[in-house]
Image (tube, rainbow, N blue to C red; front, side):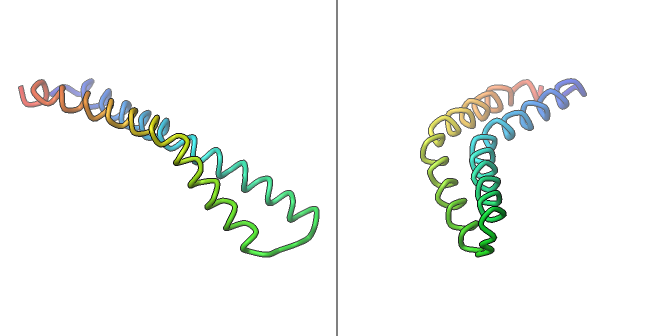
Length: 89
């Protein structure tokens, strides 16, 4: 097991994690910014106004992007499992 292999494996793991989490995080961030602007304009400072829409959008994003996220994770796991014999050898 070489240093290049370990660095490559770590880089792939971080890239996969970022790709999988990005759609949900971006959707939540966009909704959070929109709600913050709305609260600033209307001066309504109610906590449920920020919490409920973010949860709903997060669940919707998981429903929409869930299959893509799962396919990316299974693809990465397949690469890891295939590379196991080269790690021990």
